[in-house]
Amino acid sequence: MLRYRWSVFGVLMTALVVAAVAWGESKPAASGSGKRPGTQSDVELVERLLATRHDYQVALEELRKHYVAAGDVERARNAEEELRQYHRINKQAYNMDLEMLPPTLQAANNVPEANELYRRAMTYKDKGWNSDYIDNQRRAEILLQQLLTSYPQCDKIGDAAFQLGDIYESKACKQYLRAALYYERCFQWKSHLGHEARIRAAHLYDKQLLDRTKAKQLYTDVTTHDTDTKRIEEAKKRLAELSSRK
Image (tube, rainbow, N blue to C red; front, side):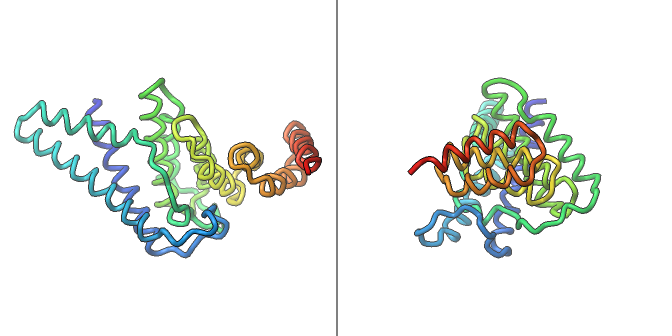
């Protein structure tokens, strides 16, 4: 069962990397995507990295299949373990313009296949302990990214963005800019989770990314868009604290 689950995991990861490369080659730059100012374009380098990751994974999968077919149990196990460790690596995005779908998407259509991907992702997300937890977060990430890539007009894209933000913020990743950008997509795509996503994005810009200008903008938006008294009061309190600083 474990071998089967990791085989499926590998197929999903391959599909995600291929999609990311293809998306980066075809899409325009996303507005406000979080690229760091003052740096030369890294598009070609990041695309090469994505392709290299893909090739490395495929080579390991093919090597494992070769050893299984040859009856070489020990080396098949070694290839499987190396593949497992590859999936557990916390892979950075580096250039979010190569990943983020535009904020103008309309989450309009009910798509059963997208619903199933979301359901499967949530059976993994936040489950388990230690390495099992890391593995399950990666599985959930892959399924949610597959949903966004395959069904960008479905009505689950905002919910998927929220869950990806939560994964990237979690201890499995700690990729705070990536998390904040997905939280922003959540409310931009009109998810019912958007109010929670907005204040969580504000927290990240405030506490982790130290972009207090962006944080103040989002806290202000909480006070004008939200209806939850607790979130509104929290946002007002933090705005006052930030405004009192010289």
